[in-house]
Amino acid sequence: MAVKRRTKKANPIQISHFVDSLIDDMGMGEDIFFKKLTGNWNTIVGAVVAKNTRPISLSGGILTVAVSTPSWYTQAAFNKPNILKNIRQFDSGSFGDINDISFTLKNF
Image (cartoon, helix red, strand yellow):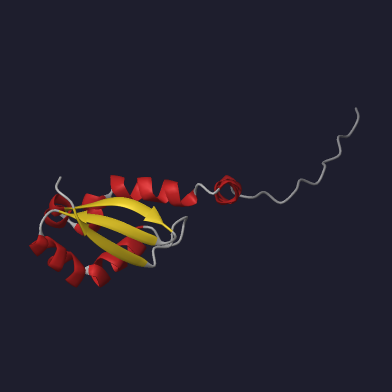
């Protein structure tokens, strides 16, 4: 009976490393992160804030958030550091690093 030789296998890598790299190379990371952010906005900022704010775009690390009224604009601006902290805790560094938040008044 012939003895089979074991061949040395390459060091395995997690598929997420390959996929993350591919997404970054294709320039889609920010879009994917924005979709994930909008889908989880209620969890990130809480129900009351989410009812009166809505992320509308992400470009160059700046998240633009619509607010429903002038008083919510003031409230959101005051809470900006906490919102940024919550976003970073929600998804630390996968695809989208948010450096700043810009608020704008919009009826929704």
